[in-house]
Structure formats: structure tokens, C-alpha cells
Image 1 (cartoon, rainbow, N blue to C red):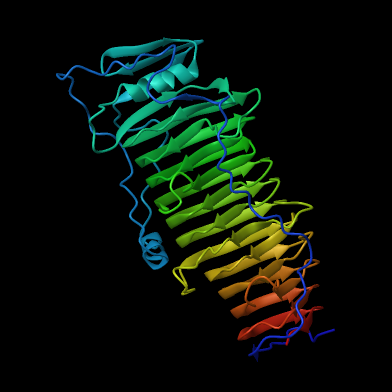
Image 2 (image 1 turned 45 degrees about the vertical axis):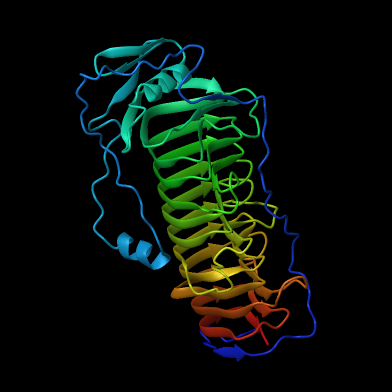
Length: 437
């Protein structure tokens, strides 16, 4: 047993000849690029909504929209985050071009004085409002939805370019979901904003966007679904999705991840809150130049190798370099699978603070990862989950890992196999063994 409060600094250079796989099988993230012809998509026309836009004489008011995000590096994102936050705009406030309003059981969509939809279908009302916007616009125009309703889980509402959507109500997706569908869906578009949104029910995804740029997700709450939010670049793998901002995302009860990115360059997240999700709270795949405020997960990935915060598939790698470009302010994890998991040649990350306890698998597992710092500003890790530096034979051994300023309690800190240039600095250990090279 180590002395309570003992601090230790350990540097190690050179690989160990013995390698062993880390505890718990790691299921690689699926490259979900499938199409499902059963999914119905509405992007301006539907059987029940016709997109009549206002006459040229209609005077448009300026929309209340968020400026386009322009994150070019994690450092720039972090600097932007230190600025005084503007007061949050309540749902539906401010100017807009079109709206869909529910009165009793009837939805009415208007653009100015022109009624573009009237009926009982929430989806048709939203689509008609979106379709009524100026098709030649080059800046964002805004649609406000006032009311709650249902839509089939295998349908999509496709977001067009230069569009802000503010949903003041709940979308309930019913029936069976389909692979390539989501209530809010976007493909190869730019300048899209979802200001407020609540989704519940059984869709495959809550929000699913692919090969997009300049996207803002504001206040989003999702209950159910398979994956809460996924943004990837699978429409054109040669180009990343760019300049993605998420302010406050709350996901409860998803079968897989709360929030997942794949192939994103330039990501700013305020907070992800995950409760009782099947796999990860926040999963970054192949993502670079990211700044994340807080990941707060309770029971994320229970019984699995997933984690409150997971990095995989060369996240943080720019060219052949792992210079720090991923910044996370704080990771909170209670229960679930792992607390932090870095795997498959990822790295270039600094996690300022951690608060991890009672994980069923590792509290922290850094496996084949490079230039990773955990605890730059402190934190606490409590068992029973171990803290481990590890490696698999198919990738280069981990290197340039720093664990510092941490209180570790009722656990084990271990390095198997030996990594290159590991630093264990100012660790206050309480009933915690230190088994490092």
C-alpha cells in the first residue's frame, strides 16, 4: 500500500519487449455509412406541404441567428470560450422569416402574411416553413416552430443551406427507425443552426449530419434514440466536416453514444451531459482541433469498454504529428464502463480536470496514444477502475503520456507494457499502488 499523500514523478524511456492487451474487449466504432431506402426524406416538398415563398414585395426582418462558427484550432476555440458569454436567447424570441404554429390539433405555417401549410402533420408544417425561405439566400434565414408533435421514426427533415431552426416544443419519433434517418438530418450543406430542440422516441439518430460545414447546435435535449447526435464526413471522406459548434447537449437513454463525431476538423463543445447511454458520452473519431468544455456522464457504457469520454481512430493526429490540438476542460464520470479511453493512434489532447469514480472498467485507459496529458489542472480518480497505460501489437507503443496533479484513491496506476517518455507527476495516492516502468 502506498503512503497516503505520496507524490511521485516517474520518467520512462524505451519500449518493453512484452505487450499485453488492455482489460476488456474494445469494439471499434462502426463506420455507419449505410443507406436505408425505407427512410422518408423531406427537404422542401412533401405530399402535404407545398413550398410557396413570399412575393418579391414581402419585407423580411433580420433573423435572430448565431454568427457562423469559424474555429481553426483548439487554441483559438479556447480563447473564444474565455470571452463573456452572451445571455441565452429564449426559444422563439427574436425575428424570423417563417414559423409553424400548433393551435389545438392544427398546424399552420406562415411566411410573412402568406399561409404555406395548414393541417395536422408536424413534419409537413416544418418542411413547408423551411421550403418557404428564399431559395437564393446566401445568409441564414430562420424558422420557428411553436408546439409539439409526432413524426414517423424512419422519416427525415433535411436541413438546407443557410438555415436556422428553433423548435419550441418536442418532436416525438414513433415506430421503427431506419439506418440513414433522423428527425434532424443534413447532407453536404453549410451554415446550419439548430437553436433549441427536444427529441424523444425511437429514431436511429436524433441529429445526423454528414459532410457539413459551419454548423451550430444550441440547446438540445434528446431522450431515447440509438445515437443522440452524430456528425461525420462520410459523404466525402477526403474532406472533413468543419467548424462545428455544440453549446449544450443532453442525451438520456440512447442505445449507443450520446454524441459522436467522425472526420471533423474544428469542433467547439460547451457541455455534453449523458445519462444511462449504452456506449460513450462523447466519442471523437478522426477529429482534430477541438475544444470541449465539460463531459458529464453517469452510467455511460455500463458493461462495455466504452467511456464517458473516448477518442479513437487517430483523433488528434494532424499529418504525422500529435501536437496538442484537442482540449477538454473537465471529464466527470460516475459508474458506466470507462471514464476516459484513448485508443487507436489518437492523442494530442490535454484534459484539464477529471472527476471519475465507480467505473465498471478502467477509470482511465490510454492505449496506443501519443502526447496525452490528464490532470493539467488537477482532479480526482476513485476506484475500483484502474488507471492504465497500455498498447496493442498492431500500433506503436504509447508515448509522451503525462498524468499529473491527481488524487487517486482505491485503485491502481499501471503501465503495461512500458510506454516511451511517461510522466507521473504530483500524484497523491490513497490506497493506490503505482506499478509503472
